[in-house]
Image (cartoon, rainbow, N blue to C red):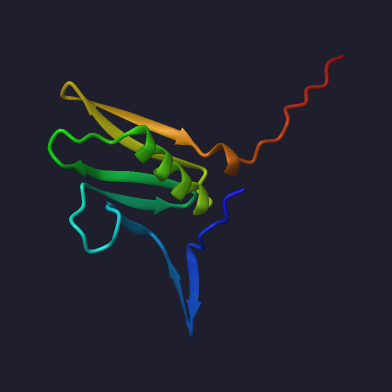
Length: 110
């Protein structure tokens, strides 16, 4: 299991909550990056916004897995994003299966 990242930190009389994150695709911070995204947390759901890449450089399955793992570590239950394809926006929601409260459905039949 992947260790979780705390969304809450207490310092003095304040509790700090992570609500917004900027993600950069780069090997080392400070170097030029090839992609950027903004993520906004709302309860146990994350919205990935402002996905921008360099020209002719799309988000890959590896990028998708990285975002999935990040949201999983923040103990999110799902994340949503919009993808443009042929000029048409497609909204998608992905469940973080590992974080869902899955309870078996039991039906009593007479």
